[in-house]
Image (cartoon, rainbow, N blue to C red; front, side, top):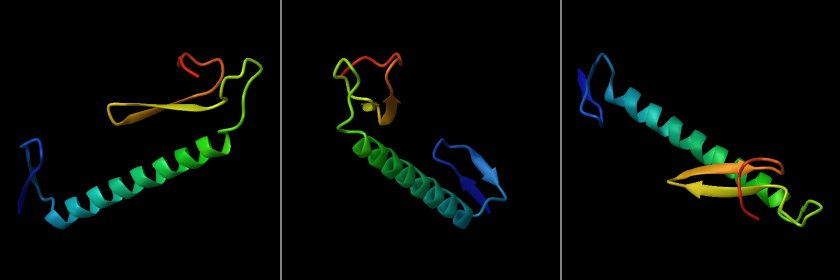
Length: 77
């Protein structure tokens, strides 16, 4: 069987089921990591440094998320 990936490349010897399982695992891992980040940010939501800035903040950029702690290069409050 030949599988044609989203990018158009052919992959020999990879079953459709393998691709489905791999994609499902990738989505489950992404959802679990997202939930962990949300819980972490919720836990620190009320925490502030001596200047009143939040101790942890999140910024989404193009579907990706960055987490910053005090002293990091992320700008914002």
